[in-house]
Length: 499
Image (tube, rainbow, N blue to C red):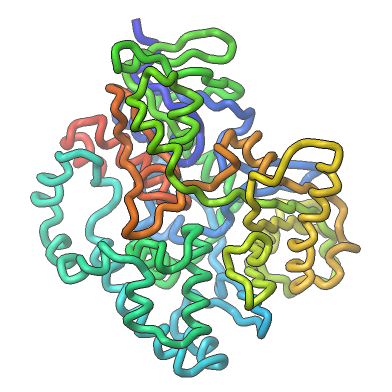
């Protein structure tokens, strides 16, 4: 007797998307989440009246009807929706040589760039014009219609042939990196650094390592669908997916740690929990990373050795230092929500501590903080290998957080005097709470040097979703991975009914 049709390990956006969609298709689904809070790297948490996003806080197309965002598409078919605040500019970039606003409106954005480098602004416009038609072509094929097996071919040929024809001229771009497009259109060194920065913020890699469709999607969504912040923070997205899961009969178990995926003769039969309880199902979907799935959740004999070794050899993006603050808001009436600070122009933007991302979402949603206060989340790359819990751990935390404080002082000069709550997270924090291999945000698979693996594994009945699965890192990407996986487990006719 089976406990369910599908067990999903982990309630990140990818896992919840796959689980909720499968429940919508009529499957009996159980989601096992080790943490006491759902959401994985996108979960929210509350301390002393402050609501913090643990990870991403930048979103496009959550409410726009024509949005390509897979989160919007899957919430629609689940019967759920979000409330969000639109804003422009989407943020400010603070380089050593100056600060400028980043507008969703492309004309306004190019005018700001022209103040710094007129030639660079013209080149950046040409760069965008090479990529935006690819976004327009992709709009004709909703992610909700796609799957990760051969049966996607007749679906595309039968329902989306005109859109496929539109994409043909852009095949060289689709198969290349953003760096290829940049090399063909941009010579200005400052604008090239700007493009590298935006790619890094998106994928963890610079332009030559980032696939072109990812940036085409980003440019299109922020200029066409608009930039939004969900009321309630990133947790509002998680809660909407959980509601959708439960509305269609799925079940979420919090504080339910999966110790092992059970395999018999290369076939999944269920999972064993830390409590010793066994849950049986013919299908298991792991929302854990590829490293954690293949080295922690499976026994060595369950996989071909070459397969697990290939996973271990996959390069990954470093972890992060996080600074979550509750601050006094007096005299900050003109504060804006998103900022990126680059400290040193002579250092690589990917150098730990050099590029700092800052989010102050309470400027859009006052319910995230007590009256008269703001919530602040700042983070920067930090390698896991240099950390260990010892007598100097606390001192090292505060020392490493100083680069984030210096970045915040570019926006709020007296930030240190305003702090009423300080939480410092290290790569060890990241690894512990999110159960991430070395606290990483996902694979660093450079364009042209490999592809993100799909949801299938060598074990019958075992699938994967999340940021170490195609199409990769970021909330839209992991939601898409959940859709591709779920659709691959049902008949094409079922997906056609929803898409």
